[in-house]
Image 1 (tube, rainbow over the protein chains, first blue to last red):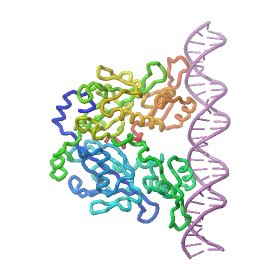
Image 2: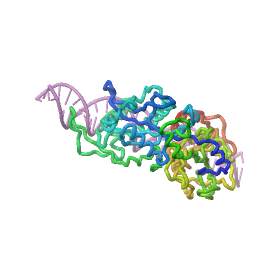
Image 3: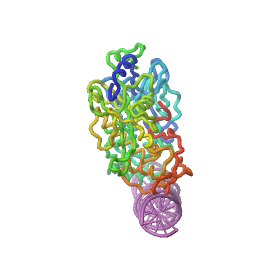
Image 4: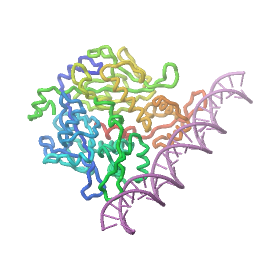
Length: 242
Length: 242
DNA sequence: TCAGTTGTAGTCAAAATGACCCTAACTACG
DNA sequence: CGTAGTTAGGGTCATTTTGACTACAACTGA
């Protein structure tokens, strides 16, 4: 086939054996205020399966990979279809290819993960078959999707610790407190405001604007902007869409 | 959901369009003494293509994904076939799924990267169609394989900076100087021996043995051992083989 | 005007890092 | 046997980074 030194024996066996099916799944994270109005927490949308296997159970949004879509395009379309939104951040997570992920047939799933800015997340659709759930303490999902979510969570926390990803959860302009809330929600611990400010200010691409957030009950906080190219952040995928 | 017996809208459209082909490619790194006997450097084996497209050009070892192999198994088999060796480290790198990676047909490649211990690397086979090349300053390869190699290199350097991966380049027992050489080769800068020692000693799972490396021209260095589970290192893939 | 809250700045000790030095241990050679 | 040369392995010291904490300024609502 491609990229190989194998001789035609490989080609022959390929005609005898169907290649594994290829699907895309997407873990979409958004920050939402928790119901009891404590610290905001992580949520993700799931879709109800309308066919066997796992009919009626909740699963990650996804579908088969179409011939005309690049992997990234497929994931983006996915996100569009389930939430009606364009991603503020979208990156490949992992390719899951175990033999028995699906009971009936062999399926290789390429998982992506996305972040939604909180402003966008509020507009996200809900329906009979699309519902949002809290990311931790998730019920049992179809296929191996619990494992995929867990891995996505681990990656998110990991990247958060190294910085330069929290901004995707907030809008274009944001207060330091908003970014700090993101950290606290994802890392699940409180963060000292003063120290947090110090660190952020000395990271590149963070620029103060001369606008302030009005309407609060107290001193209006300054708005900041993230000036870096969102895709210059190389820590998880090769340069451009592949 | 491709190649299935289920009847559904999705299935019908899938019969009209062939699913993309699925292949595995493997970037195999080993540390070898450079020809002019300076600091050792990174090498990787490539195979010569014997068929179109890119006939005669060098490419990453790889092949189509067989129905009966998990992704990891396929990559391991790959490594076995081209080098005759079992991997000391093998991890998924990225799934490359651009539309025009191969001129003739759509191919999605799941790339893995592997590290060989230097002791193993010496036994690695070379042949007419399998040759080793220096990892940097590589010639032009078939398909998008240069890009894959570059990304693998970037990941390697990244992981190296966070530690816990250099040991896979050396044997089971090693001197501190050997590990330091790995760092210097991969990061391409010199490292202070004393500081390096201090850092390594306070990382977990590094144990001194009471053996010493004999036969050198000078004071025999102590041998150390890495006692951690090689697969407990979670930083790049979900828990177990998927 | 005052009380309450939050943004912003600074201080200080503890920990981590990088540059450098020193000496013990060993080999090779005269 | 003794000495020169090299490396392992241990330490010091200044600098930077980190976390905990304090203090004050700015603003709102009553």
